[in-house]
Length: 456
Image 1 (tube, rainbow, N blue to C red):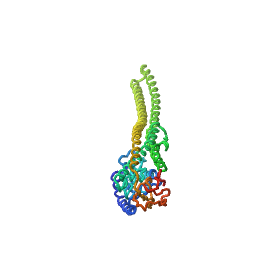
Image 2 (image 1 turned 60 degrees about the horizontal axis):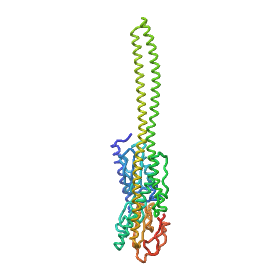
Image 3 (image 1 turned 30 degrees about the horizontal axis):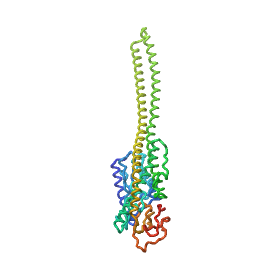
Image 4 (image 1 turned 90 degrees about the vertical axis):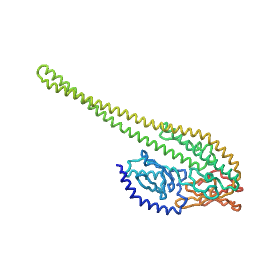
């Protein structure tokens, strides 16, 4: 039974002091971690391994309960606040662990077997300081690199206005190409998922990584493979969740069919019995009617026999109407099952049409964006020499390493861009804190621009 709103409010009031205490304690611990946060276990694109931290915004969906669903911000104490439930500590949990925790809390006297989905709607922001035009915090986007964040921050602080404008245009054009390429990859996987749902498949086969990255050679490497794997994982989870919800709805409707069939069978047996009784009553009534005609019976008794015959006929008609009513219920149940499947198919077809339309738009927009980026790159010319350091926090420990323009970023990273003096333009060797990343001074004499994303 669902608790009353008054009882729920009392529970929230009793939990409030402990929530305040947790907020104060978490604020003290987070004071030393300003502008940093815990990172993903594997990669920023793998939403299943992403660990929630203060500043993340998640979308909690409770199927059939709109008042319990919506976007929720993880507060400074690492908690989320749900109506009727109160604060739930999710700091350090993955989305799947958070989903299980929310489901368990809702199952504890509020809902019966709730279906809960949790996804990340807005990760922690990125912070960029130093030699950029607009230092500050910017929203994290999957696939973000140092170059794309610099573009969002207005470009490098070049000494000459023309060079600064050209470099900023190139960075913005490059960011635009990356966004469009990521959208194309996501739409290709979504189209495959929707086509499988339209055709009633139990599983769906995503496009090959080669076809997803077609026309975007500069995005190759481990980072892009992880990004593609994350897209496939998200669409697979959506496919399985929607299939489970539809199957649950259909099973619930179909489970009523055996009950109706048993009731019809029982009524048919009663009809058969009533017919036998009616036949016997008719026989006795006819026999007694013969006796009355011979003067050996009473007319009153004959009337009683006729009344019994009428009652049996009335009961027979009543049972027959019950069978017809149950047959109508069975037909309506079949219609509801068909309507549920048809409604799901209509929704899938509508989404598929929208995805195909957006893919056609990208087929026109993406080549133009690549051409604009190429022309902007030609105008940019030589870039100023700079050093880029990234501060990254993992398991409560901050690590600083040298990065390149193509270094893949993670939520909560702090990017420090410094202009190098002539005597600083020397090779400093690979960073010990991040194996696989080597320093790269943009525009330094004799240096080569890396062709692929640095691996972690």
